[in-house]
Length: 472
Ligand code: GDP
Ligand code: GDP
Image 1 (cartoon, protein in one colour):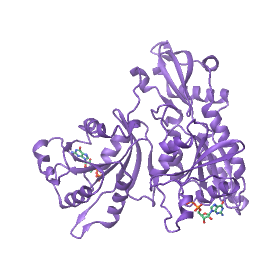
Image 2: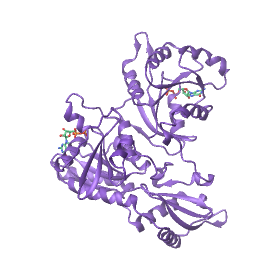
Image 3: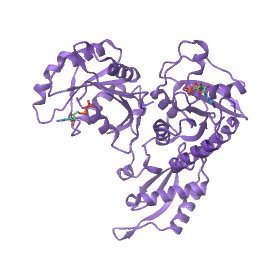
Image 4: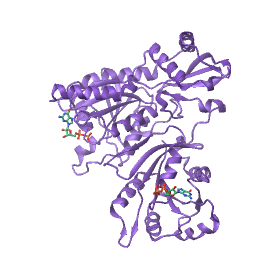
């Protein structure tokens, strides 16, 4: 589990600046969920030694009437979803009425709140921030987000107390610094992530202590048909449903069996509770979806045929690949469409999703059950690819033949030389390539190598990560 950090504060204090600093360190993906989460932005953050999910909020304006209702609602949702709240204030502006109002609110919550004074560059910071102690939220952390000043130290100090609850917040330190830059996942969707030693959520662990079940998350934007599909799948199967308590942030885990394979369905749509209590139909939660993706081995991403490919679909796809999870795509609501509409959707998807041609694509109707059975063939295939055992001999042989067919380039007058390769982890499969000057390999060659591995190993449905290590 990695922590969720919400940035809150009035407009203009520097929240977006800090958000960008947290998320742009690597090719982090930022998910914007228009309409749904107006004024909220989610990003996968990596900074210093830490990784976390960060939420940026539009901000809270303080007018005479009080907290602006719309923006406040967005910020409150973000606060609700967060494990840690960073309350940002503007060191140059001093304490404002809006700051005070927000502080009053935050003090009442059972949340970890840190007070962060931004824009401390070029001023006498200590005396400028003194008045913020009156907000009674403990120490005032001084930063200059625009220049990155104080940001590492902010994280070092504020993450220390939460590491016990969120051990995955610590990025795994590479053993040599060269390899730091060399981790590479296709299309630059990269995230320094540990291999399969990652701890699953404890409930999940209890359901699958031996790790033999395929954890399958069904995700997609609101109304795409997640509940309909989940019910369809469960309706066809004999299901043992455990009564799992859940908060708005937790998915429901449903063990099931199909074709002699055991699964744990990670249900983000809240089918169970919907049946139990009619009133509590849950809102779509981005955080819940992101956590479900992290928890899963395979992600089944639903796309709405009637709406075509949306930004949200691409965001979810990005998060899935970035997390190294396997993926199966399903275009839902394929029933009752005219032939020309179908053709148009197919060609749009081909054009825009060409970059993940390794993912199987299904056209289904959750409502009528058409095509649903075949989904599981692709899920099994993706899982098998993601967890396949890869021997050093085989990986080295493939590397050699890739190198033979297409020599690595000269760098600084010397030819880059690949020496051998071995497996470094599962789900996603990690292939570690050793050689001379490998850190200078151009991205194009790295991509060539990944594609070569994919073809040779016949890996469908999973991203592959290739890491490079200098020397032997
Ligand atoms: P938000 O509305 O809270 O998201 O604020 P922004 O991140 O958009 O920043 C508002 C303004 O403050 C922008 O003009 C930033 O360039 C500026 N700003 C942000 N951080 C700093 C900083 O550390 N120092 C200074 N001097 N300006 C900053
Ligand atoms: P969720 O928010 O993703 O869980 O979506 P739901 O399962 O609640 O479905 C939203 C709406 O789409 C409902 O009215 C469903 O009946 C409808 N729907 C779901 N799947 C299909 C499908 O395959 N075809 C058609 N035509 N409608 C569907």
